[in-house]
Amino acid sequence: MSQVSFRPARVFAMQLLYAMEITGATAGESLPGILEAQPLHDEQKKYGMKLVDLVQAHREELDEEIKAATVHWEIDRMAKLDRIIVRIAMVELLYVPDIPMKVALSEAVQVAGKYSTDNSGSFVNGILAGFMQKRGIVVQPSKKDK
Image (cartoon, rainbow, N blue to C red; front, top):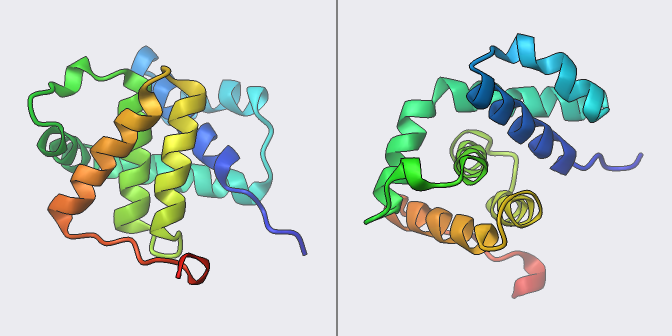
């Protein structure tokens, strides 16, 4: 059995959250257009919706964490996509224990680099590093890193 990649699920979650933020529409109202643009396997769709639900449920907490991790930088000045990508990574780090931390971090940096600005990958990496340091979250090295 082949392993399903969850990057499309993260991109789907990013697109759906972005559409909701820009238009003020609900997830249900925005969902058909996003699904039409990016067909997903059922597992990917389920995981993407889990991320959307977690971000919505914890948005205030996540934004407070972002503010704390971005000293001298107003959250409203951040690119919307960067903020959404950071929120997704934070919910994976905090609320999805079966996703390795290294994977959540790497995916956030790569998605930001592909879909946002030229500097977004390093910006997102810096915010998440500050968040993890503040929270005392340590990425355990994998067997191949040892």
